[in-house]
Length: 247
Image 1 (cartoon, helix red, strand yellow):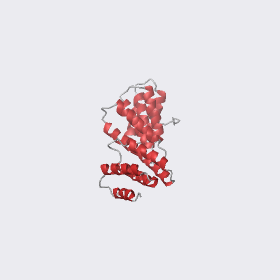
Image 2 (cartoon, rainbow, N blue to C red; image 1 turned 120 degrees about the vertical axis):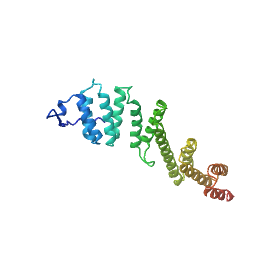
Image 3 (spheres, helix red, strand yellow; image 1 turned 90 degrees about the vertical axis):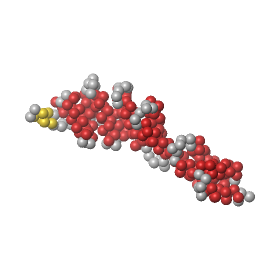
Image 4 (cartoon, rainbow, N blue to C red; image 1 turned 90 degrees about the horizontal axis):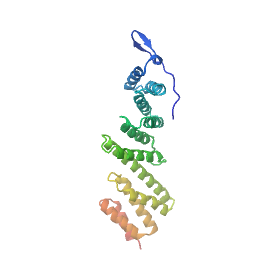
């Protein structure tokens, strides 16, 4: 959310006397804010950038101030505020030299806001949506590899969440509900960077469920898939034991 601007007076030496931020022009203010930013003093930099965006709407430097304002919030780990300011830049200036980086940084903010898999994954889904959009719009971006890497992490986080849901239902003996989530994992397992451990855990859990349900045809299919994907996995022998004891 937009924060209330806190008045900041920062003196600098110029022409042998002190000049306050209030007396400076936009270009001088930018220079002071940039100096704070370079020194990682993001809070005073943020306050000056914000003042510029409020008071210099028609100034050509306002784009930079708006961009740097969002970056300050990002570096202060105030990711929701950063998203607001990045999106404000896109709203005010739909096309600018900052657009590509802004679209990437919005994805980064959602990624930073996301929680581990055992929590709600709305932020993770928004990160996925944003990075997918970024890759479509900027397919030749220098940040493509980084975006793809984070996108895969987010997708795996959702798969992990599905597995945890399946496991909860398995423990409650709601086997059909558990299988529903496992099927979603198997259906989405088309990404070469998908976490193999999630896939293995899902296959093992499916085998346990089919054994409980005495669904031997499905258990045989799990065995075939297991042998195909990881032929040396020790749980293959356990599945074979299930099948040998089916009678």
